[in-house]
Image: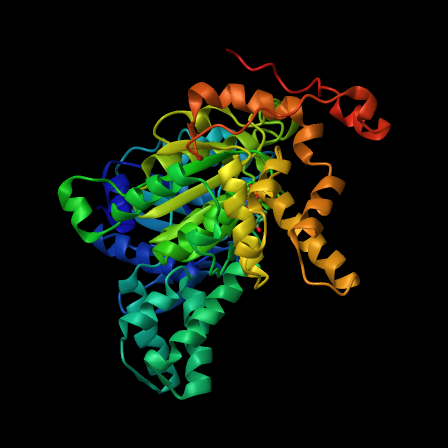
Length: 527
Ligand SMILES: Nc1ncnc2c1ncn2[C@@H]1O[C@H](COP(=O)(O)OP(=O)(O)OP(=O)(O)O)[C@@H](O)[C@H]1O
Ligand SMILES: [Mg+2]
């Protein structure tokens, strides 16, 4: 695999005069650019609006060359007119790349078209991605990945020597720091060293906690420790079976055998039937960390922020591989995809585009489990082959599965399922979701407790009678989903559930009758 540095060298050797660097890590960017200028045997100057122009010498000394050169436009004209070859690193250039800074764009384009002699390379460094439209074609963007384990080893050694503590370059410690930027890792190591007086494996839990905190701060991703086992999920046998087979493809022998790391699975289906539950169970079963990715939170903030959010999230997931990336309710982030070009300047489309490209191209073992319960809000690109390994439809539980789910939830409440007439309860609960069955057990417990009696079949039965399951009000939507899934998805449960009972309008309470009316915005499924 080519490293970022090789990529950078390649681009500048190929004649690119301007390159755009995206990273928060100014120190690493500087390090790479110093390497580049040495490799190309060109003098290096570093500019920022606050310091003006600095000259970087071979002995790593930095001297002020021109502290008055704080005007970016003047600087670009100066570079353009210079007879001298060189590398210019323009730090924190973000504010001058706004769409309305036309003179600056113009001069950048002039520089991009300069002949190769004298050789001039200008690197624009910004923390967030996004170039103005008129520069995108002429200026290649290079994104800095998160530090590799080897980079982290350097950071660890550096932190230890700066703090005067002993460091054992423990692999577990470096592993714990994966997913952090250099600055974050340095801070985490520093805090651990201050607390423990050394940096060895005893610092692992400390660094891991620190990482958890930092990931949470990103708001888009969340560490999701879970102990849900597959046995806690009732039914979904086909899906479990498929996952079991895919899980093996993460093993050591699989690559040699010619298998790629599995990409992921899309779980579509009825609410409350165990999609989220299953995502948790997969991670716990495979013993991969579970990262919950909130699509809804990707969007927002200043220009370029949404793209940066998704980029960071995917980078972190990649750095933490092998892991499960759980995108819950993926459709939430994608609302209004079609019209987004008009409404949000194409941000949604770009965010989805980068997610799809990443999914298609990723080689690291990041297993994506995406869940959705609206098909009409999913862009067709997402469903195309090559993105997910498989699409499963999670339908309402069948009679046998309802028995299983009741068993699971009774056992959770430390009751013996044998003491209950599960057959009659599951017969009574056609159209109930797993979540509703769980709720009936809980409701029954309350009743029994109020009556000072032990929980019995009749309590649960009564609770079921009082419940108005979602499948009744959403009958049409569920039918629509089933039709759609028939030819496009595999059934998570081996068999189809019973037909939903036809509702008699007069028995439907008036308020619900209104909700039950067909939603005109749900497209008619194509047959
Ligand atoms: N198949 C099942 N087996 C056991 N429990 C279940 C099952 N399905 C649902 N439940 C119970 O219902 C709760 C909610 O289910 P879950 O969050 O997995 O549903 P979902 O399919 O993700 O729904 P939504 O589409 O609303 O997000 C679970 O935490 C679990 O307690
Ligand atoms: Mg869910």
